[in-house]
Length: 483
Image (cartoon, rainbow, N blue to C red; front, side):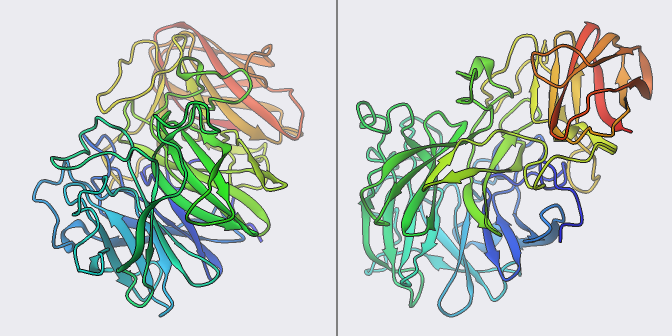
């Protein structure tokens, strides 16, 4: 039975675990992802950590600790800042042990660690290799990247990799991007390392191959992941658009995949009225994740961006509609794993905002911080988990919007916003993004966090809350209370 409300991000807001692959072991769901550092100068600079939650209490996430350190890999390059631990995946082998597949920048190889427990201390095990002992990635293949590992019902083991951006710093000297989408290797389950067949291209179109095909507008970039529901294989990947996770389907794990659709966009691009980066509902960047079924419901796991750049990424998840073998694009929400709207009573941090944008719209982020001018954004005080700070929205300036979905406001009578800053103006609160205000709050300059209160009469069991500021100056939007 669910005992805690679940939010987005579903991990504490000071934790940065993008690229998450969810897997159920026993009665818990475990998250295996890369690990950003807040305000890090590059992706994936932290060691691998793991979080887990009971399958019937998806708001109650437990920190399992650091499961693997970069220096455990014998091939770890000396320079960490450009050679982080990228997106991993995990599978349980026929021997009952848990095998952790990952890519480390600067190595060109797919490394494997192993542990007797799903979230214990993993030990280095070896490199995925051909029968002659040469690691994959060392025979002039396209770059091995973002490994997705999949054990089929018949016990056969498949590894999926690939990276398709033709010009990128990841393409080290001697490396090349794939020109034919994702690659597949079948591995020997006696050692979980040795290639039996491959690389084979599974039919996920590249940028050159997409025009005129079902993949047009959504060619393969990276983030390979495989799932199977019923008798159908679902290959999940990040498209060349980068902000979206897409999927393709086949009745064969190694070939014949046809484009299925978009699963989620971290700017809600593709939903009605949202056509491109400029009118996205958040500043966008890359995303990576997968699908999972939990107690008869389907969820898509992905990540969002914060702190005005791409390298402070946070774990997100949404329930997703699945009918007749087809997934329909999920909307970003504040209540993704909650099983329904959040309660209309209590204190809510603004870190759970699902839409944040300014009068100037949004941007596709880079590794260099974008300008603050006209752009509200999520940030935190302090640098890392040691200080345990809560994220909040800063730079709420004229024209800024912060949206939260969804709440049961049936019995909610008052709202208080907790802010600090030099702003003077009016904060309008709406239940529809472009709707009329249901209440307004005067915001005045305050050096310390101060609460401003108003009556709220917006009954409904599934209501959004959009906060829109008009005025001078800017403020930090820390939290709000529903009463």
